[in-house]
Amino acid sequence: MHNGKARAFTNIALIKYWGKKDQQLILPMNNSLSLTLDAFYTETSVSFSKKYTADSFYLDGQLQDEKSTEKVRRFLDLVREQSQFFEYAIVQSQNFVPTAAGLASSASGLAALAGACNDALGLNLSDKELSRLARKGSGSACRSIYGGFVEWEKGDSDQNSYALPVPSNHWEDELAMIFILINDKAKDISSRNGMQRTVATSTYYTDWVKNVDIDIKKAREAITTHDFQALGEVTESNCLKMHATTLAASPPFTYWTPNSLKAMNKVHTMRQAGQDCYFTMDAGPNVKVLCQKKDSQKIYHELQKEFPAEQLVMAYAGKGMETLETE
Ligand code: DP6
Image (cartoon, rainbow, N blue to C red):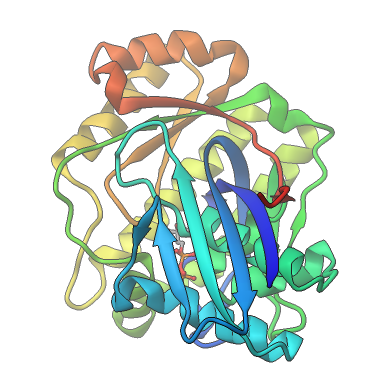
């Protein structure tokens, strides 16, 4: 029996990963830059054993069916191929999310699984190698290997596509992100399918790719100079550009719902009233508000005027993936 366990926190992209040039290896079309957060995380343990006759996956104590096990099984196959250790495994994952808001994250999940496999099989992978491995499970997972600000270098091969920390002199500790959990039933298009359709059909996609390098540069500069307004502006504008590509896809689609728009409008109104806050959104209806820690309570209370406390989650910068003691 070979056992390992790890914990990884989720990350939210300020400059988004949107589109792949290689579906199998998960090589992205563009660099992305994220902030790892402390509010949502996954703990995963894995046991490889000769005794097992198939892989099984338990999520929050529930045995998952074939379909939900698929991503995990494909990832285990990669690990087996890389390590030349051919045993089946039992994977047990626990998602720690403050509410049952469907915020289960593939970023924290696959980063924790990569860490647990590394631990179980004694692979001794460096952070860079772990990032490459996690990337092949889910692109955004390669950024959850590290805490704070992280940039995923797109690269052009399995070898050179991985994430690295962005030096910030601990500036991330002065920031906060407030999640507004939107319960509207959104169109169910996974990020994987959404980005694939966008790359294949969106007439705005080439402009997205052109612009994203400029946005990455602006974000890096803002992080170096600790310029919150500049980081907020580029975060919000990059998110809007990503979401614009989905409207120009065929068939067109959007992740926005009426309540997402209400949240985005609220952020704009607050900003006009002098509050320093900016939003971002991913492949779902939730809205995340980037602000400075010193303003976070005030902004949280202001948001509470529109959204009940159950829909709001305060998050601060989180740590990188870490291994845990197995029981
Ligand atoms: C919109 O990492 O979930 O959140 O690589 O297909 O597993 P796969 O996609 P995933 O995509 C995340 C897309 C995003 C932007 C981001 O996190 O950068």
